[in-house]
Image (cartoon, rainbow, N blue to C red; front, side, top):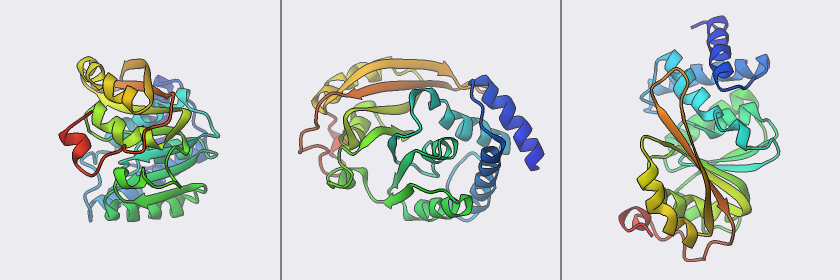
Length: 239
């Protein structure tokens, strides 16, 4: 796919979610896509390899949250994988101070290569487990916003993510499928961890049949020091 074709398709898709990314930033998305496809031949980064699907299911999906964030936020993306949603949000909002966390070092190497290629600043990667860095004073309750597209039950994901959010900040996971029962089942955990479910925003990702939801969780008080619990506990025994 040429840059001209990419730009045309990207512009069509972004209109469907009412955003407008300047041309020089669209070029960065194109370079990101090319690097993703190239690296994916060597290491498994994504099951989505079709260029049109990368635009819709990675880039546009990541950017659907833009209306809920501000350009000057500090943000952490927990379980970022190949950089989604954190890296597209950084490209769109250059003044965001972004941390990308992932447990696989090969993904971190890929992300560092893309960050360097695109000349992005105020963005850094950390290789490790969410439950370990959440105990580190340099990261604990330091962020205006935590985002995650990680596939985990909301109660479990909240235990990994809410400790990173400062009081007054937000945790917004990207969820798919029918989530009403999951949200209901997470209320106790969210409350114990210092959060409050403010809203659930449901929509269909444009150009796909994917049902998407944002669960907006407001951090109203500090998270107790015992959370998150040691590795494996949040998923085996949700709060």
